[in-house]
Image 1 (tube, rainbow, N blue to C red):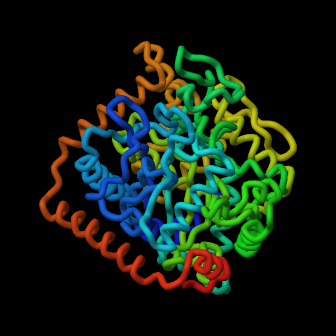
Image 2: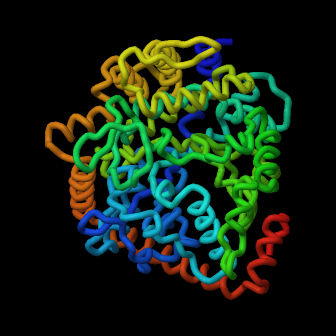
Image 3: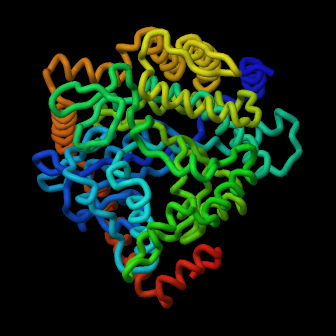
Length: 523
């Protein structure tokens, strides 16, 4: 059955109304930088609360890499309003620091300079920091401070009920939804290259990021490296990758939820010789959580993941096995230099349309050859996506990027009409705007960045700095209502109290804690 036929069936069943309750959440990372544009070496601002336990303001790899988390809401504009509020609060407590406006880092003297995130004195806090130390030892710290935006999406409960009934499926709803969403993920991987083409915003980097490594980039100016047709170097060869895959054969399997969980479980339980050379506890200090292929599940990099909300200290694989797939996390969005929040309504509405399209598309299992094609297509578009005539691998042949993109957008047009409840809605207009980018690559964010750098005579650093300043000034003009300020103050205070309670509750040493965690016993 074609996507168009499935859309027609859903329209007749009244699906448009149920889809209005879909939920979107965002996780947006940003580096804190000094007034000179260097990485901030200061601690996470205490006034923002405890990074270990705050539900909306935390840190990722580094103490300087702040992560802002919105609630999952049913309206994209409301999600952006929530993200704006968090930005306003953070900016109030940055002093003379700024949030860096791009994915690729600011000026960093060396990877050793990058401070690991700290979460307090508890065993849980120590585990988070040791995990990050392990990432630095395995892949280098520089790669870990690349920022991104994660788009979290779940379909409405009423839609799932309608969708399952419409297909006459009698399975347990949790099993049905998990299988359907694993199929979504497989198709999102097949067409994942479209996201960096349309929204990639990292065609250039400061040469301090490379620091003498041999990379296939050209020199833009004295301090900038770039690829002329790149869309998202963040997703390319110089970005975050699990480089041990070639040596261990590690690749997550998306055939089913059970296969996915088993493949990650194998990786976090199987020793890796190259990581054994690092050591685990060296000179009394933990250098990594273990010497296995993956320390924990989150180490496995993928542009899209099945997710389930975890309970405190619950392993993600256990949560998935126990309660199925709750939502999909798409991780391929760059921080957009042109958006004050790093992401805008255009991306969110398009990605919601893409999610529904991926659900409705037939999605067979991915064989090893297609897996290689998927990986190669993503890297090819990351480095050469705007190259005229670029061809991608598909079904043992090649196809022009432009032709494939138009095929996808044709289907997305009818999917957008289902979401909009008609032919003249915002998502339908959005798909038309994306079609213009396919036909005119100079309209893409990556092309606009390079064009602006040329017009202004700017380096990548100068462009990013100028927009960082501009966004900060705009956000500092925003005044939140007193009750919203009070709500954030309460969240900060509650997070500190929660961290203190966790620290007071520790009753075992860290080694015992780790053993219990990996055994799934909790402590």
